[in-house]
Amino acid sequence: MQETNLEKKRGILSSLALFAQSGYSAILGFASFFLLSIKSSVAVLGIYNTVLASLSFFNYITNLGLGAALVQKKEITDKHLSSALIFQTFLSLILALIGFFYTDFFLQGYKNLPYEAKFIFWALLFSLVLVSLRTPPSVLLEREVKIYKVVIVQSLENTIFYLSVIIFAFLEKPLQGIILGIVLRSLIGLLVIYIFRPWRPRLAFSFAKLKDLLSYGLLFQGNSFLALLKDDLLTIYLSKTIGFQNLGFITFAKKYAEIPLRIITDNLNRVFFPLFARAQQKKEKLAYLIDKLLKYNSLIVLPILVGSLFVFKPFLQLIPGYFEKWQETIFMFYLFIISSIFVAFMTPFINLFNAIGRVSISLKFMMLWTALMWILTPLFIHFLGYQFVPLAFVLTNATFVVVIKTAKKYVDFSIIKSVKNVFLALQTMILFLLGLNFSKNFVQLPPINYLLIAIPGSAFVYFLTLLYFEGKSIFTNVIKILKG
View 1 (tube, helix red, strand yellow):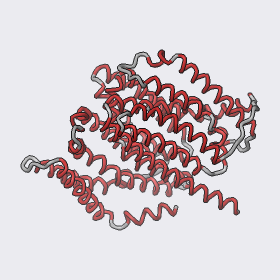
View 2: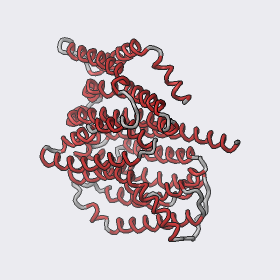
View 3: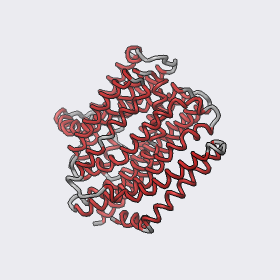
View 4: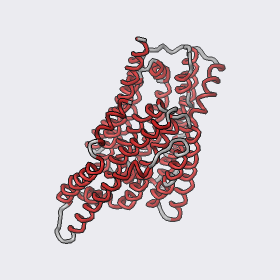
């Protein structure tokens, strides 16, 4: 009984740590992105995005689901851990050596590569090897329900990387900051994870145990692989197809348009996932939770996304030279906002499918989205130009309608009922902003004055309308949800 209570406490601590870490990393990541967008060239922002995508890619190709396989097994031995470690290390060393000796081959075809590009590539290869060495302590911490320690390491790594980028951006040497950040995050992350959970590597290898782990791990990685193919590999493809300069413009527009999703929607989904899982046999409870997730996600995210359509251009005009540098992204930003609105309505249901054991449905949708992205993106680039890459996101994410229709087969809910009052409040907010924009034709408002009126004014009108329709229940329901 005492052990169960301890595991519960660790589980709660780990959930809170995951929530805090994802929000913290999103904010710190945006800070580094924002400074790079001010202090560095457009191409550097494209390189930065490619590096982030490459880190995810390298982490995936050496993992092969072995970590997840080790976590889910009822019992593991040192031979399981050693077999996984030896295989991953051998694989990563082979890939790193191939990458090192054939650097020129891998970098050929990229337009206007800076001198530092080769060193960034080598830093990524170095990181690839170090990441493969951390599987045993990470797995043991997760099995001991001490995920919060893994989260601390991830937070430390992100802090080191992003601070390196930020500091060197101020010194006007952003690429050197990226190189140093990659190396330091890998070294320090590896050192700290072994301090948190000491484990002595052993030369013990078993093909049978490795085969057993891979049989589960490769299947488990199916969904992750499609996500990698849809997002990170697409970024790497774009960097070579349209060049770092144009990728920098896309990165800028997409990053700003997705801030509410990364900070709010992703974290709300983390909180609701265990709630869905616990209520998977209770359809009425699931319907209640879906209603609340849709309401609170829409309540916070939609006014930010819709409001940003009105304030994005004045915001760019605030910083000297910022608008001139990034004005080409405004059209793409508007398209990414539409895409983000669709995503805000789609991800809660994918979260639901995973939580109630319908992972196969999520996998099918991921296959559809991956195919659409890889078909539409090259077509739009070829026929319309890189500025229409966001349109591929819009059309792909427009399938949220099918996702909602599928979810209704498993849970009885009304999306109109859930977000009706939010949409009524949004209408009053939009009318306020349209009126303010119309008045600008008669009264010249500098960007700072416009923003000082538009942001608090629209927020006041929005929440006042919402409180009129929702009343105090908008706050009291939060407590009920957290109590389960």
